[in-house]
Image 1 (cartoon, rainbow, N blue to C red):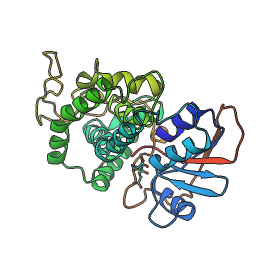
Image 2 (cartoon, rainbow, N blue to C red; image 1 turned 120 degrees about the vertical axis):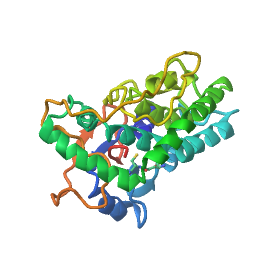
Image 3 (cartoon, rainbow, N blue to C red; image 1 turned 90 degrees about the horizontal axis):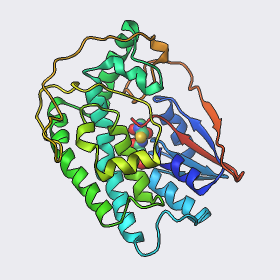
Length: 290
Ligand SMILES: N[C@@H](CCC(=O)N[C@@H](CS)C(=O)NCC(=O)O)C(=O)O
C-alpha cells in the first residue's frame, strides 16, 4: 500500500505484480536476496530494492518532487516513518486477523466481495487460524495490543499536531502510518477509537479506497477501552458469531502466510498497469498486507 501510493504520488510509471501468500517467499528471495521474503519489493530496471522504507527513499532519489521528506522536517519525518514501520505496522496485521478469528466470514470482504458463505467460512476458519500461528497471535497478546492502541493513536495525533504528518502533501510518514491506520479502520471494534482523530484523516486521505469490514462486536470480552472524548465503548463483550455469509470460498482473499501452504498450485500473478504518467522499467511486487 505504502510503496504503491508513493509511486503514484510521484507520477512514476510502474507495473504492479501481486504475489500469492506462500509462494511469495521463494519468488521474493529469488529477486531480492536471501532473507528478503516480505512484500513490497521494487525493481528499478535491474536494481532490487526491498522493504517499504528503502523503496520510498529510492523513489525520492529518482523523482525528488513532491518530496516525501520535505526540507525542514526531514529528520522528524524519517523518525515517524521508522516508528510507523517498526512500532505500528504489526498492529495492522495482528488486530484485523485477531478480529477475523471471531468473524471468519468477514474475510471475503477483504477481497472486495461480501461475507463468505458456509463453505467459504470453513476455508476462512482454517486460514485465519494459520495466520494466528504465523503472526504469533494469542488472546493475551491481542489484549495487550488492544490496550496499547490508544497510546499509539495519541502518538499519531502528536505527530500531526507537530506538523510531521497531516499536511497537504503526503510525507513518507503519512504513507507509512496512514496505510496501517487505514487497515485498522476495517475493524468495526476499532473505528470508535480512531474516528475523529488526525489518524483517521491521514488514513482516509491517502488511502480512500480499501476494502474489508469486520463487524463490531468481534473481539471477545478482553478489555473495555473508552474512545477518546466519547462515552461509548470501543470493545464490547461478544461471543464468537456464527458464519452468516453468502459467497463462496473462491472469492476469498488469500492474505497471510501459513507455515504450511494451503495448496500446491503454482503462484498465479495478476498484473496491472498503473495509470501514472512516466514509463520506466519499475516493477513493484506487492501482496496482501498480512
Ligand atoms: N516493515 C516491512 C514489512 C514487510 C511485511 O511484513 N510485509 C508483509 C505484508 S504487509 C508480508 O510480506 N508478509 C508476508 C511474510 O511475512 O512473509 C515493510 O514495510 O517493508
